[in-house]
Length: 171
Image 1 (cartoon, helix red, strand yellow):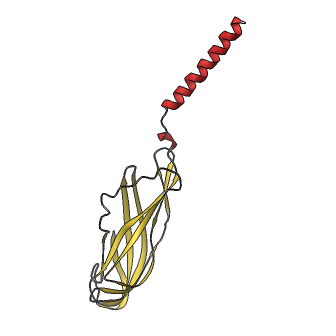
Image 2 (cartoon, rainbow, N blue to C red):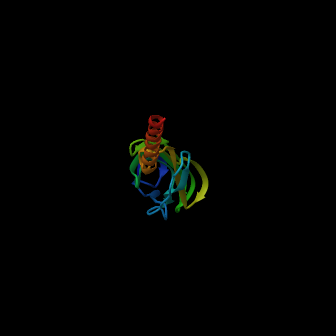
């Protein structure tokens, strides 16, 4: 995650992190969940923005990457936002809008997940704002279906055909 100041007015914030800083939400690293059925989704805390300095209004460009280990997926999105009335670390209001979410990502042979970073506005949020991300299974990876059951069905069907043929010859 990165925030880059893009301007403002009446601002005592001159560099990245002067008025607001970003970090991964507490407990995000090591979070696990399973999406077993199409339509299953999981929402979790993703980013925390913390007020640091004093400024009246500051705009920011934002960029964030969310990475998963199984299946291996990396998703990056950019956006923009601003904070109003950061006084002694207290955030009076904030806004964050992502450019291209939700993002559909393919995995495996046929699987697709949709990933959405939360944007929006907050009024009087205090000294920090935590946003969420939501991952939804759009299409299951059908290559992961186990084949032993299919093999047994095939053998059973072929055995039935052999039995019918022997029966026909005997008659």
